[in-house]
Image (cartoon, rainbow, N blue to C red; front, top):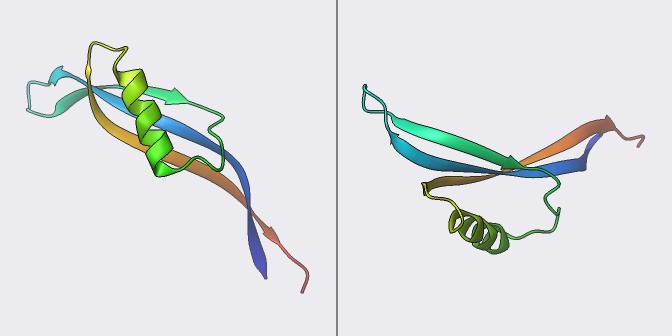
Length: 75
């Protein structure tokens, strides 16, 4: 049997910095580590909006990335 042990989480914000010649968005990515494990989607989005208000670029996307270690558990 295996179990996932939460290790860390990060918040990844993508900001729109214009368009590339081929029409794809040109994104500026900022990552914030040590996100609280219990942070809710509402709290994360509110924090992202607060941070975005300090930046001249438009907020394009918000991601939460969790890292867990998978370990074997004795039955």
